Length: 298
Image (cartoon, rainbow, N blue to C red; front, side, top):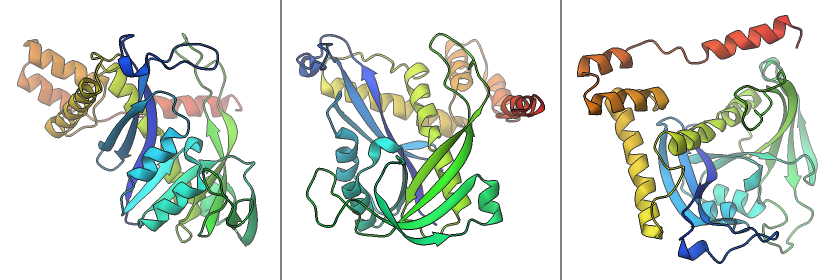
């Protein structure tokens, strides 16, 4: 597989209450919805944004329609369950790209070929690997279409995941647990363990959203105009790219802090270079925590 891994997702940008285009929108419970949804195609190898689109908040089916209208060839789109749409899957294959998407276990399908997982796949958590035909019928109408026009491969993975942290708490209250993931893809010849690894990296776009909002200052919007909001988003993306090009490292909160010290005159160029050349210890604490859980029998 020689295509660009592109992580796809969207995030809500909270706006000022004077946003004219979203002031009239209300939820079913009557709550006002003032904000915009930012859709991103995030290239994993470059750790950079390849495409950015803004739409009104909570427009039904927005994620699939936006991606379908902006598909590019030569990519492997990695998506979560919110992007499950047979019409979208067909469109991705039609433009010459591939997809890896998590789906619900309740989807309708018929098995056409059962594949025995290899030892490497089982070591990666793969318990089942099948080629199927999806959908409830042929030629049906409907928003997402009722079937795919190509064979689909379903890979069932049992993964150890950490529980979400409760709001207001810094650490999760429980040890890791096993969760069942069902991954759909049109990659029939790629090893199952590689497909599972590709989907594992989808979380990278969530980390970038957090960096985009908390570090680059886009948690709240500064304009009440679509053009102003777009400018703010692109300025943040440009700042992120410049940080990466300047330091040669993936942008994070420590980098933002060090560059801020440099711009304020509190740190010199030698200080920044010394920090940038420090060895990367990312994941050391997480691996130590995993070992601790294993010793405790989890």
